[in-house]
Image 1 (spheres, rainbow, N blue to C red):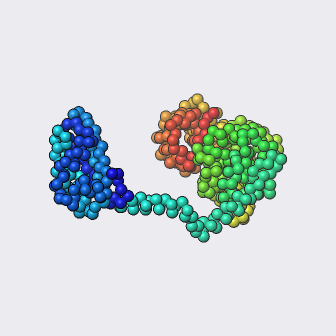
Image 2 (image 1 turned 60 degrees about the horizontal axis):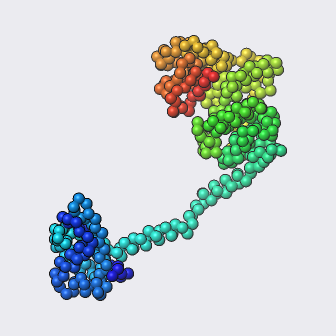
Image 3 (image 1 turned 180 degrees about the vertical axis):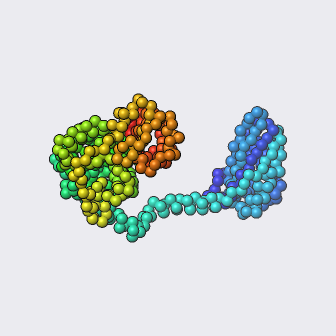
Length: 424
């Protein structure tokens, strides 16, 4: 007789014997040694005939001349009778020809098990058809975001994705793809345009000739390759960098604004464009876009966000007035690349003051001892030796804004306040 639908309890027992036995030996021992022990009301054969005890399930295995296994007895009698029946099983001391020991592992209430299963299944079903509530703030944010995303358009014969203010703005931000344009729209920046691949569209080339252009690509090798091609085919004024390894489409609003505030003139990115810049400047006396090569201070960037975001109209749609351009014909400060050429292969370290002048030049091996005596107007450091993480951490603590070296090895943590420039 198999387990009945009316089963209330299951008696779980463990059997061990000093010898090899089979399932039939265990069942025979149960019926043989319990018969007549509990009286007529708890006679096992009668209980089975009446359907109050189901089929006795025995699983037994042998190893090294001993047998062990599990016994399950389903019952539909009351709790007290089930407990008595379970206790009686522990009086069995022989199975077949072998001495044996049977012990009660547990008495399971089947109804409790079923209730637990019902509860867990009900929870799963509830989650399947229950719609999460939307609070008022989330609803407003969702509508605002959808409005911004809907404003994305395509411009030019190449149909490049662009924000709504690209054509009207004096400045543009060039990103990699449509998702980057959408993420900048979420942050209230409406003058981003996407190259959509490694081949730079003619529309973007033309826009860069007419407007102040900032390249803002992902911080990976793909972004580096797109930037390289962009610099070869058109004029870019600034380059902004996300954290290394991060994608523009995944940045938060705070990270986007920080990256755009800290963008650098393109002359700091490619050394071979410095000569071209100066030749153009000297020929025209005052170039159309007269950008100082002096590194930007964070305080100045914070005060003149318009110089970097121009008409990017963040959230409140209020354009920020651009900073007045200088018409001075004064001699330009020395560039970081001219300092690199003078320090390379000499084993020295050169501290650069604000404005590009040399503050001090020492033997590169003495750099750590000299850091403690630095003045507050130090802007950069050019050092003719490899820089590791330990040295970089020390240098970043002293207000140095850029560091040039032949190589950077073992750098796993880049301080946000310093930019690294390799000699090559």
